[in-house]
Image 1 (cartoon, rainbow over the protein chains, first blue to last red):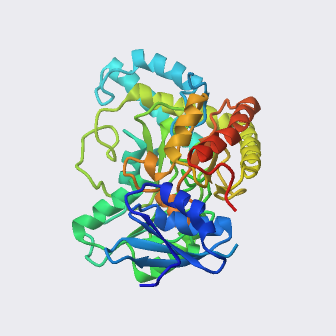
Image 2 (cartoon, rainbow over the protein chains, first blue to last red):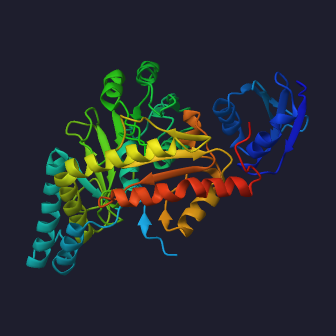
Image 3 (tube, rainbow over the protein chains, first blue to last red):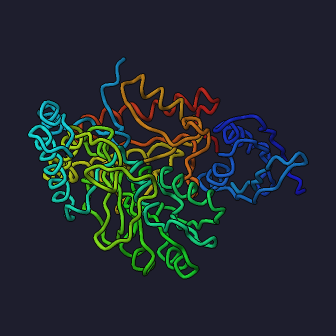
Length: 78
Length: 381
């Protein structure tokens, strides 16, 4: 499993809360570092990449956590 | 505060005054069974035939190509499933675009689930437009039938129906025209097509099924012994006449209405794009005249629909929290668009610049308020 510099546990949150969490906390990592959003909400699969596109960040991809919940990886570019 | 600005015509257009007048007259005249031979029956039959004639003329099709169903959904089911053979081979499949209305996808799944088939899906670009090549490739792989909407019901993008039909060759194409019927001329290339009267200002409970002359169409459901062999059930004569009257009226006035709608939607698109962290989706030019969809980052779809409703504006949303399935819109997902904080605005025939300006006056502060409540006072860096 690819380690991220910041892990956001958004299990159980409904949209748009995982993306709000990401928007609020992206500033906690340096440019070039990564954030992982673990989300059980099906909208996150579309909205994390869309957030990256709209905010000028890099969407790295999707990888499951140990419990099988998808983690959406983002690299801070700005 | 009551909702006094109705901006959800794409879900259902208010009844056209011509439809209302026609229906009121037909309620008294059209009660009898149009299959019987007595005078009241002949009156009912005459109304039904007149309605069919009017719809055929308004759509530029033959009378014998028009059937009235009990809903747009029923027309979709019959339109698509009627293109399939009774006992299709196991390997066979149906190809659809990724952004078809759920009624099309449910009909396709119903066919597929019964026979364990793997259906094909043609991808769309970021404007929601389906790949013509995708339909061509599916046809080469072998499919029984195809479905492509005329215009997308959520984002308004007009599909390349004629080109897709050409790429499909001999494969018959069902065109879901529910979002566009009456507003835009029918495209070329359909074998069957479907429309829904309450989306053009007719009553609910009337759909239009078109079967192009020469198309091999088989009733996918039990037969009935009614006036029209393609559809079952006792004809709702007054509603059918209302649907026809509304369609005629809309076609007669659509140049003026479409021009006004197109410009008003342009105004909305431009203004909404100024709101930070907002995505206006769908093709900006090749689109339905009356409809626009956009999504606000960090905004809850249900919250914004509620907040706008409190301010007197009725709008639809494709966000997961507003859907019965709690799944995000498959249309927005297929386009790679933001699925949360989504609003669809669609204009009724009498919508004015004042309606649009009033909406645009409250929208930015409504969005800002919801973002502030979410703890994002200003857009984060």
